[in-house]
Length: 214
Image (cartoon, rainbow, N blue to C red; front, side, top):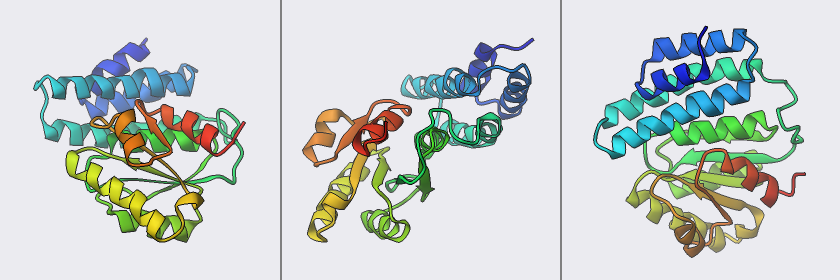
């Protein structure tokens, strides 16, 4: 019988086939889907990130990790209650995307946590520029803009985004939250963001607080 620790191990080692099979087996055992996601998939991805920082993994491994997560997460989502795990009401829309970078692992996990907690999520993917966030937020009627930041040039672009929203007279219309491995709360405050998350699941707490969801 497999355990969640087995899933964490194969995710960290970027073994997609094994990860997907173990995810399905854990769900078949009746384990809590959220626990499988948090303690298996997310922690495994964190292990992969730690390996990368220690120069024991390379960028292609991170890309594969994103593909792995994208393959496993739908199985978890399908096992969750349709009304959302925490019962957060529909009606609050969050636009989420990655600024400039192609790396989507963190953004995808945040998007999943928000969705399963009942938020209406519009995911615009990767390699976005400030105008893309503004244009899509207007298009979908977002209440919040969530930006994933993966490298230094993207930090400058997030600052441009908050300035752009001010120039267009819509800054008060959107709550803006940021996160990513190279970001800090101090930096987020310096660019005028409304919130910062150290971990993927922090996005849910920020959204509930800033959008006043009980």
